Image (cartoon, rainbow, N blue to C red; front, side):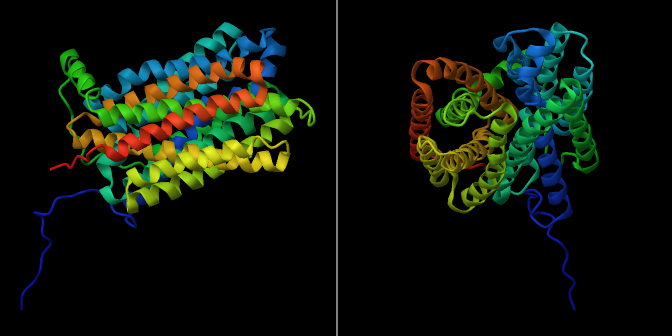
Length: 411
């Protein structure tokens, strides 16, 4: 009688669905996504409160968000390469803990300049999580699950974006902006604790040599692959389309024939869970049929939803925004998960490539979110739809380019 033993010569390709570590990773990264976007967008619904309390203009009030995204964009260039040296899990824990502490301090800001400084710092410390999340997933989970789990992480950010706007909007209207930011901070603290307890340590992370020369070399390699450049462009253009629409939709709903108030108009963010569903669903389809096949379908869904919003009917607009939001998160979920996979296959540092994708992502958010204002002033909703549609068409063109780009296979 013979006894069979496990073949330890087989490579460990990562945790498989159904295993305890897989469930812990998925849950922890979902919570991390919730924390990141709750804290990032916690001030967006409070702009009118800042105008009343601090006496700033409406344009100045938006600095409480744009400075945070600026802080993220600046730090992403450092956080990704740094994680290639110190490790993914350490970077994730430091980022979430630091962001929770700064979020608490924001609720006690003594002045407008102090709040802006804290919000910039909030972006700086938040950057560590998005910079390494998809790289961590690529390293620790089985390749057959990468696209789906990246979609789950992006789905967590969608929930966080909704919480960050709705929670603070409701509490801010009832008790003021300090209590609203305090509530958002509590969400951040709770999520940081969940991640600390649940996220397993990295098993497959291999530290890279520190030093400026090594970082520059990794940066250059992350800019040489045409497919990676196209994916950076997908993030840049698609989020620009998304932010342009959401930044101006409130103005449309405040005008005739609806004349909705701030609280009622903010309910449009209830469509954000559609992004959670779509990013997960399309991620699973990408694992099954390939990212090259599924990514263009997200573009088509977003375009269809955008065109539906042209109808002057609140229920129809809500349906259009749900389709548009679902399409965007499908595109973002697939592209963001594709970046570290492509980078690894091409011998590029995953953290560096993921950071460059997100730099483009937040740059697109800042740039086209600003451009949407003049588009609205010049041509109303038709102008905003035209801008967003142009960005989606360019996104679709890049997805077509990616379909023709040869795949890389890791040895």
